[in-house]
Each structure stands twice: as structure tokens, then as C-alpha cells.
Image (tube, rainbow, N blue to C red; front, side):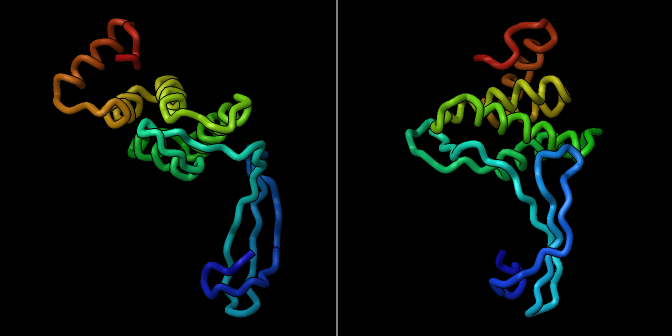
Length: 156
């Protein structure tokens, strides 16, 4: 593992342990060249995923991008970081177990919306506003009205 501080290729593992949810291995590392310490996480990857964008472009799936979008939706909401991590891991596992290596971005967006709807309604509306590209206040009103009446929550 390359040192993120000095670029040295020869770092040493000082401590390894599973994360709380047992979905990754947390490794504390030491760089003998510069003396820096840093942490890495090792996760099981069942298959290499590719995201098929609405434009037709194909890009490698990025777990960190998924996690960031969920964290942004949940910003300043009373949700534990561990729960956000479990939510992200759950979505990734569902994507990997679908049996497809190419996943349409719509499928990922719908999975995130379903997960957020079960965790926090405010985060759900936040994510939907970006995902569904709300352009004016009326879009929010219609969406929230659908939620309150038990209508089709996330479909146009």
C-alpha cells in the first residue's frame, strides 16, 4: 500500500480488525520512510460494477460517490454515521447480487430513494429534489403532497 503522504510503496500494517458491522477490515498502517500513520479499509467486492448513465455513457461504479450522496441527503439529520455506512453497504450488496455487471443509474437512484424513505423523510425529499431535478417550489409541493396522501412516492 502506497503512503498517501510521501508516496513510499513499502508501508507496514500495524493493526488489523474487522469493522463493527463486519463488512470490512480496518488496517492501521505505518510508513517507515516518513513516519506517517494512516488507516485503510478492505472490503469484499463480489463483482466489478459499471453504471450506465442516462446519456448512454458507462462509468465504473464508485462506492464513495454513493456514500457521499447519501451523506449529503442526511446532512444535519439525527442519523448515526454507522447507520449511513450500513445503508450504503446494503445498497452496494443489493447491486452486486443483482447478477448484472452494468447497472442503470436509475436503478441506483431508486434504491437510494427507497432506503432514504425508510430512514428519514427530510433526507428522502432532499435526495429526490436532486435526483428528480426539481426546478421550482411547485415540484416540491407536489412531491410532498404525494408522500402525505400515500401516493406513488418516487415516480413521476
